[in-house]
Image 1 (tube, rainbow, N blue to C red):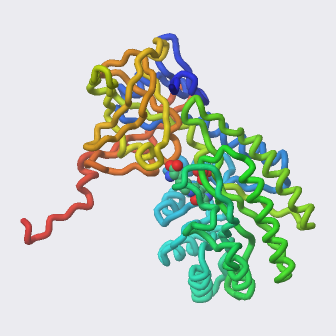
Image 2 (image 1 turned 60 degrees about the horizontal axis):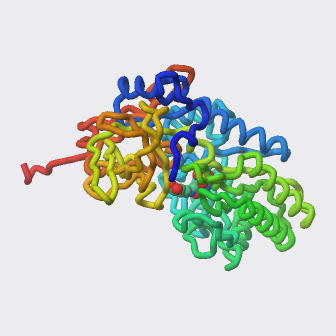
Image 3 (image 1 turned 60 degrees about the vertical axis):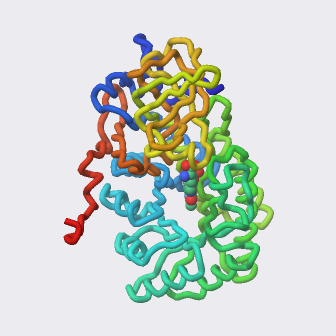
Length: 441
Ligand code: LLP
């Protein structure tokens, strides 16, 4: 059974009062000040993950851009941290683009993704002078070229290519296989056709190719295979079209530990395997070293996030199980419902007490919103604080207002200081877009 205490990461520790601390802030104090549910982001841990990526890859390869996948967690404060750490940023919508723009993120370090980018989003990216647009289809290539021509500019692009790799991960987050909506397939000839059209176009500058094969992956071999296939494809394009591409983006996808059973590879191990595969493939095809781009999301921010909840009713069903309800659930963390994602938790105000009570952690939505199927907790009572670990990625960014729950606040903690980076929504926020037409009044 998942064991909460083994999951401590970053600056998390148990203090003398037996309380969980993050960034030297006692979570009992955080809850008293900011309420629950509360997303807590460990700034030092997040910055350390950025550093690990930067340094592990810089040790191995001449030019690497680490590009944070904003879809994992994007707020204006996050943009500042990513900028300060010297990382690049990948955005996947006009909303993410706008967030980055408002935070003052340098556009020359940003790229835009999406399998159906709207004209407005492409215009906004062009207005901002984004470094690269990652083109996902032949029709989008035509639209971008047309737009660039009208603007009297050239569009700087990558082509998203499907290498035909099915990694071992949840089927909902596999994207490198043949049967995918994303990108241009190598196997069908669409990728080669895209390269040919981009090369012929006077309105786009084709800098390189991109692939992203999946998410929450533990098996490093898939990354190595992707590197090999992509270099092979680049070499084939050189042969057929006389074109040497200078940039290669291998996407994101490194998994993280959600429970004590998870043993993901380290960032340094990822760097080793990618560098080795890349060097081997480049030697095999006699291809010059490209600029390598990586787009980690989850592995940069996942373990830096913790969600705090207040315990409500504790119901024992004799001979069956005990349900512990918390004051959040599906709306702040849809991942268990969507991907059967596993998490672990700790009674954060009794963190030293033996975890002798097996329970099911349930949300408070009007459906069976199980957060954790089974977890051993310290004897838990109404009013206790539960910490759920590794919620930094794809929790807030996928949160909803289901059941008209206001979204939680988010605080950034470091060295005993806690700053709100996302305000808690209020009831009025829920009504902001509602209208009662005249005829119903
Ligand atoms: N680059 C591209 C083009 C992507 O589509 C993604 C994630 C990433 C990078 C970052 O991947 P990461 O390093 O975070 O694995 N909502 C799902 C995950 C969806 C991932 C979508 N694309 C979840 O909660 O598990």
